[in-house]
Amino acid sequence: MSNLTMVSDKLERDATQRDQRVHHRIATVTSASDADLAASITRAASQQTYFTIRFLVDRDRVDDAYRAYAYFRWLDDSLDTALLDSPARLSFVDRQQTLINNGYQGHWPSDLSVEERLIADLIRRDEEPNSGLQAYIRHMLAVMAFDANRQGRLISQQELADYTNHLAVAVTEAMHYFIGHNHQCPHNEARYFAVSAAHITHMLRDTCEDVLAGYLNIATEFVTAHHLDPRDIRSESYRAWVKERVQVARTYFAAGTTYLAQASTWRCRLAGYAYTARFTGVLDAIEREGYLLRPAYPERKHLGNVLKMSWAVLSDLLAS
Image (cartoon, rainbow, N blue to C red; front, side, top):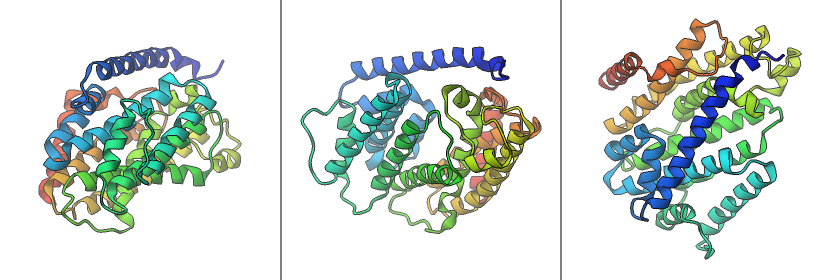
């Protein structure tokens, strides 16, 4: 019997609870008016994101920030729960790619869903050439497309790096577009390090659940070199992979925090520090437990850790 059987029951319960939350969000969407649809989706999905947008985003871009988050939340939920077979997922992503490409050319079909109207509204108002919003939309869609196509197969080191880079560019450019968009922040190699580190940590955190769902978050080259079963997350070789990724994430977090200190608006610094602080506690737990991954890391939600994270964010903000 696979060692993953020990955690499968818990993950099945977690998946059921997640599906219930998704159905709740869908119910929220169907009952919301067009005016508050995006905010309703956001709040139902993530209270932290909802209030981050409400209090930190530039006043004239709050509604668009909700639209941006809500559209991709809907897209991700659809890929995770509503579309169970690969052809359906790929067809769905292809439709979204076509909508976005045509939308930036000023062409929209007449059969847009209520959620697709969110991305249409965003693109119609995006008048900046090569804007941070367009970077967010295109790179986030690339993340979704990759996820839709990788179930059940190993991925190369380059694919893994591209996956993280797409996510890092999307999140970072969205932050700078929506928060302090009139303030300049340096464009250098450290610009995307903090979010890259967060994504590496996120993939480690979700490894147990992802393996059971058929998503393998480890590079083919490492698997081949160590003659490793990519599903055997308790093996010494897999733990060596985890240790390597934790060290990369730590290095990126350090450089990314230094970069965030250069942001000229405190709101941007606060949002960046709060985002990264969510993940450093997970790295701490992984290191304490000898790089042996477990199904969940609920302690990051406990009051003591929330207070510790808040203090870390405020300390970084005051020191910058």
